Image (tube, rainbow, N blue to C red; front, side, top):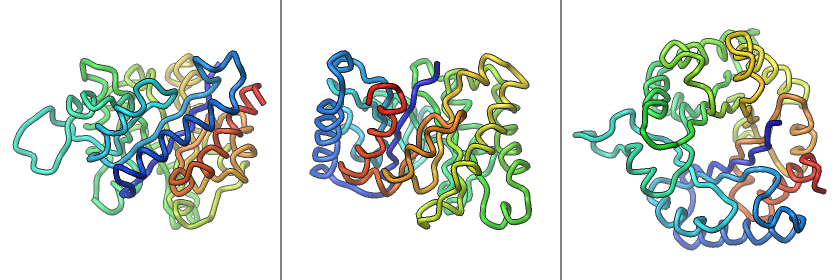
Length: 266
């Protein structure tokens, strides 16, 4: 059975004090609302992705807590003359267990292509330590209005599948993030989000049924405590990639509460 994953993308926010407050506050609150049997392992997974310069501090704080740490981006290169880039060995040493790949802001603001995304994903697959890639896919407002949602998402998936094969996605996470619903306050209805999640799962299952069924697929479009339960209750939505709501303990824990309730531990 797939577990829920509540993942916070802090984007370019935070500092040492905020990192300490968020990680300690989230862990305190989720353990307070956990059942006795969950004290060692929650019924769902928690991930936070701070900016790169905060990863070492976050990793040290989270070492004994039920919170995983992830990077927001990574270079496909292991080392070399790539000023400003961060490699997989570097983020692994900082305690990262996950990394976001192909976030819409990387694609749109920094002009990263499907090929760039595929190369970064392939680097994760070929890395000798476990850093789980979280592959972000999704359409713009104009693409949705033109009825191109599935075409865009399939193209983005195919770029990665062509690079690593369907087996390369085994153990990875996919995040569907409709670009038109990020930071706008707009959210796809649970039914709209479910339709795309079901399409993604069917695409994977058509290539490998087991991988299709066990892959966690997150929704990433203005998820808040007020809509998380409705979204997470859809059969193919396995949690959320959270933006703004991940920057406060109250906002993020409210979403965790929905995951806990739906995991059967209300």
